[in-house]
Picture: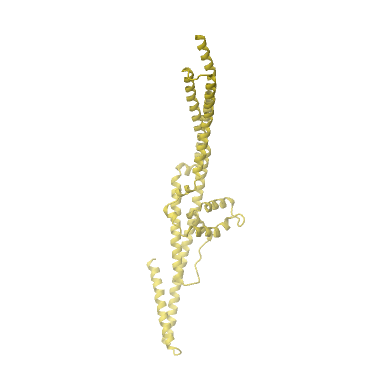
Length: 338
C-alpha cells in the first residue's frame, strides 16, 4: 500500500478511536453532557467523515485502475484467441496437406521397396533351384503380394495412432506454465462460476453472441483451461463498481485485492500470449497466406512422388507375376539340356 494511502487509513482508525472515547465520556455524563464534549464529538465526527471520504476517493481511483486492467485482459484474450486460431488453421492445413499425404508417400515407398526386394529374392530362388514346383513358387508369390498390401495398411494404422496422440487431452498442459496451474478458485468452483457468468452470455439460446465466439468460449470450457476461464469470467462480469455501502476500510482492502488479482491475471495471460507467439514462425505471424501457399507446393510435390511410387509398385507387381514365366522357361531349358 502506498504511504499516502496508508496514512489515510491510519488517520481513519485514529479518528474512530477518538470518536469511541468521546462516545464513552458522553455516556458517562448521561444527561449532563458538557458543551465541550458535544463540540469535541461534532469535530471528531466531521473529521472522520472527511477522512473516510478521502478513503472512498482512493477506492474510486483503484476501481478505475482495475477496470483499465480488465480492458487489457479483454484485449489480450482477444489477441490470444486470434493467434491461437491462426495457429490452429496452419496446423490443420499442415495436417491435411503435408502429414496425411506424407503418410501415404511413406506407405508407398515401403510397399515399393518391399516388392522390389522380394522380386530379387524370388528371382534368386528360381535361379538357385530353391522351388521344387511351380505351385510352391506361386504360393510364395501370393504371400509376397499380400504382404505388399499389408505394408500400406500398417502405415495407415501408424497414421491413425499419431492422430490419436495429437488429440491427447494432456497436450494442453504444454501450453501452460506453473503459474497457470495455480488457480484462484478450486477447479470445481471455477467451472461453476464460468457456467454461471460466461456461458449464458455467449450461448445462442440466451444471447446474440456470434456463433464463432460461442465456439471459442465453449472450447475453453471443454478443455477446462483455468487461465482462459478466469479471463473470460473477468470479461463477462462486466466493469467493477465502487462499493458505496459498507465499511470504507473493508471496501478499500477489497479493491486492493481485486487490483492485485487482475494484475496477476493480465501478467499470466500476457506470458501465455508470448509463449504462443514464440511457437509460431515469423512467417506464420507475418504472412500466413504465404505459409499456406508453400504447403500447397509441398503437397503437390508429395502427390507427384506418390504417383511415381504407385507406378513403380505396379511395375514390380507385374515383374513378380512374370516370375512364373521365367520359372517355366528355366525348367524348359533344363529339360532340353538333359
